[in-house]
Length: 132
Image (tube, rainbow, N blue to C red):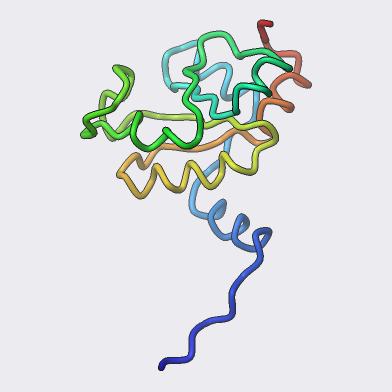
């Protein structure tokens, strides 16, 4: 049996995956969505969306369905999943799960996928639009 590397903790793992792509700040994500340069994808679960509201225009896809809905070659894709060059900004509640989701999308060939630093909470704190 080969000796393997010691397991890493989640904080180190997040640092490693985040080093593989450029994350975006709330105002950058807002501007990209407004100009049609990016698709915002909200992966928060229903209770958080009900409690805190929605980002207008964001596509809601819960985390457990994300890869199936955004794979341009998948049989369960959403109409917005138009190709592998699509710029996707994944948004979770605070910017942790979205980092892991973005890397998962990279593995499907969605090389421009990224996530929102600080998640929905940072979006709201930046004073960007939220609907009940």
